[in-house]
Amino acid sequence: MMHNQQTTSWSGDGVGTSAESFLARINREVPEYPPTDAAEAVICALCERLPGGLVQEMKEQLPESLRELFQHCWKERSANARKFDKDDFYLDVAEHLQVDAEQVRLVLHVVFASIHSQITERLAERIAREMPPNVAGTWDGARRAADLPR
Image (cartoon, rainbow, N blue to C red; front, side):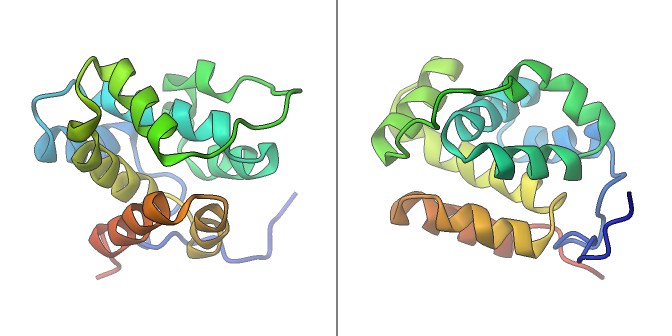
């Protein structure tokens, strides 16, 4: 099935960029965390809180290699999404990485920017509407830091 809607990502890379480039960016900006762990912590926390349809769309816009890497994050969810609360979200990511919640903001910013480089602007805006304002602020700030089209 062909999608006729906007299919280029914010960065212009769109689907087809590699897991390697996605993870290399995270590794470059927060080298103290294994990039797969940092990405997994954020992606799994998002998947538990975003509506299933948005999770599915995000998954479809990521390259196949990334979808496979975070396979267990995309679990089918029959229960409603968990309440999207900033403190719980930060705590989930912090526990996953075994760090203090205060150290999470930079990880969120970097992983959010990497996600932005993969997904369409339209999807990014829809995801932002599901976030509490303080997390949405980090999400939007990360979009400005994403690799923009040349």
